[in-house]
Image (cartoon, rainbow, N blue to C red; front, side, top):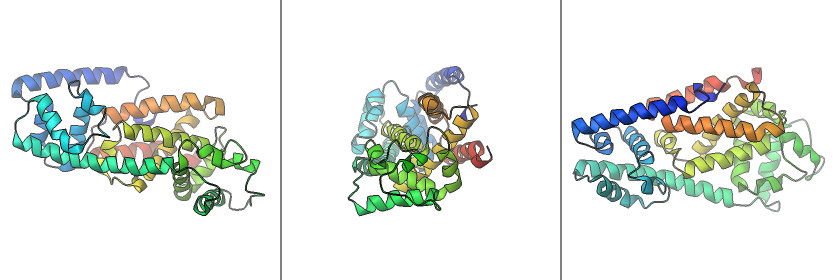
Length: 302
């Protein structure tokens, strides 16, 4: 079983994309307008407008040069680049493309903030870092005092050695912040995942990395257009993803540490397909939340 109620292969999505392309072709013949023009003239809601434009740009062959740099491009040039490539002269379309640019700017800002956190190396001499790490332990092991700062007991929470600091080298303090937010808000679920063979910490740090990659390529723009482009919202999305991945791995008998690379690879394929093909707007976000909640609730009953 795969998360979000989607099939195990890409064949269904290939057929859907093919039919959608045919649909777009005939709409273009009838209206004499590009998909981007139709979107800009159709939507009044800014969030829905931004979601539809983001989807169109990311999947446009003509705009591949823009889609590859969507999270780093100067947003003031988006309207000009799209208008020039698509030969658009409508002032209303250009105004809406500028609104889209402002939405992109907010997601670029959250990416920059998260990147700074991921590059902030864990420092055992930093009192704040150490406090967060010990808080993570105390939340999940409230009745078990640590015998020392460096101990093999950290492996009970999924760290690889005696010093958790070494596991944060890839994602920095962002990896710890994600884990701490998850443990604080989903304590019972986090404790259950900690009992799985692949471990809570290393799985969580891996998910932080993969979500950051999705954000960098623009695949999470739709989600943040419909919510708040904040670090806390990234933490919330992280929790949703972690819970659905945990249940997916349990139901597919993939909780052993050696199976983790296979499980995470299969899960991410399905998540990317879902993000790519879901119709994103306010209703789409509600469906996204319900799909995940239906999938992992209640995780502790498995």
